[in-house]
Image (cartoon, rainbow, N blue to C red; front, side, top):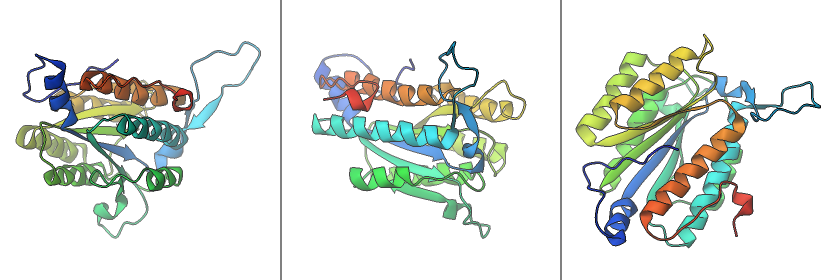
Length: 253
């Protein structure tokens, strides 16, 4: 499981100190809803001896399922006293007009998270259009100026190459980390060994390495849901509030 990284703050002392550090965290999930997210991935890595077919899911379907479960866990944590801030931004779409920012949408506002509206927006996500990754990262960066905190983080979830150049994306992400102290975790969805997807996986790996973050690869739909749940549980254990979260939201009480 990935280890949470903290910017310039010592992880030492009492649980109260830990709570103070992590309760001031602001995390923005930046998720790819471009056309290639309609492609299929295995639903699970389980082998069914009696079945002769591979169970599959679309990448966008896996993303909707994982974010819906993530939202359930977030709401549960807030009800139990968690105070960290989060938001969700999507990038991808058909509203072009040579302006990539039109294809970047803030679907969960970190200042005013509305869980009911967010669930509806996540259910309505569709995979279409290009991949304005650079524009998405810039808009995520600009959202952090509304907050004061010890730790800013972007979790970038994508399946491949951006519509804007990779060199431009790397320039933007390095600026986020070096000038603004924003850590960037990346999650690649797909098969990193496939010729058509390897360059995208390599880009996300480089972003995480350059920006003090963690890199994860997701090759099945079920593993994305579990990864986001694991990240939530890990963070809330560090919060010191005694919040314990299960991987499947349907099992929480």
